[in-house]
Amino acid sequence: DAEITQSPRHKITETGRQVTLACHQTWNHNNMFWYRQDLGHGLRLIHYSYGVQDTNKGEVSDGYSVSRSNTEDLPLTLESAASSQTSVYFCASSERGGPSPLHFGNGTRLTVT
Amino acid sequence: QKEVEQNSGPLSVPEGAIASLNCTYSDRGSQSFFWYRQYSGKSPELIMFIYSNGDKEDGRFTAQLNKASQYVSLLIRDSQPSDSATYLCADYSGGGADGLTFGKGTHLIIQP
Image 1: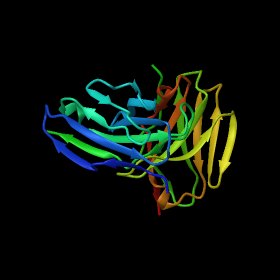
Image 2 (image 1 turned 135 degrees about the vertical axis):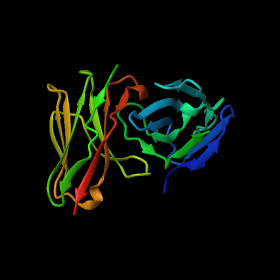
Image 3 (image 1 turned 180 degrees about the horizontal axis):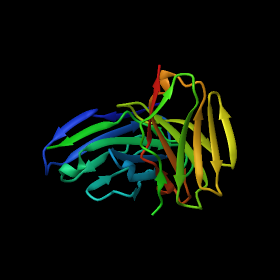
Image 4 (image 1 turned 120 degrees about the horizontal axis):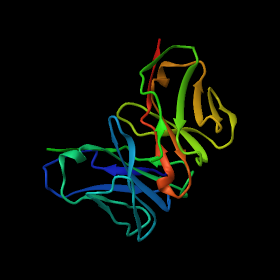
């Protein structure tokens, strides 16, 4: 069965360190997304991609970057981790952009100390 | 800025009763609406989507949309303890991926 896998599931890092969260999907979807979920804020879009070599900024992109070198993977990098980036991160994919159902990964809980 | 508003709850409903979850949105251009269910510590999963005014039924779930009032709701009939979760409303107003806006979710508790 097709799936979307995130790793690691849990990560603790120190302020200032670079951190990369992995996302791999076997749906063969062109569209991939990164969200963060925080109490009191709900799901907020960080970055998204419509295909290989395409990346776009979302609502809360400052301090994050992504790259898309193939269809399956969209890694999320925190250039210099900050305590404000402690959150649960979800990767998602969809068959097409816009009003298309999102398939979510299981999430990565990141703690920045 | 586009907003999707939900009562955070918790909303407590007896087992077997109808649970009614509500959502309002600010963007009159919103075209379609999604309901996701999220169990504690898990990822969101799609329950239903609705594009047109009126009701859409899928098993025990009914989505209702009123574009004039900018209001969308989810009814869960014959509520079960397994329905206890947080329910996220999202709307899409066009423009690609950044046109999808999520509410903060309503925490639903079904009491046995």
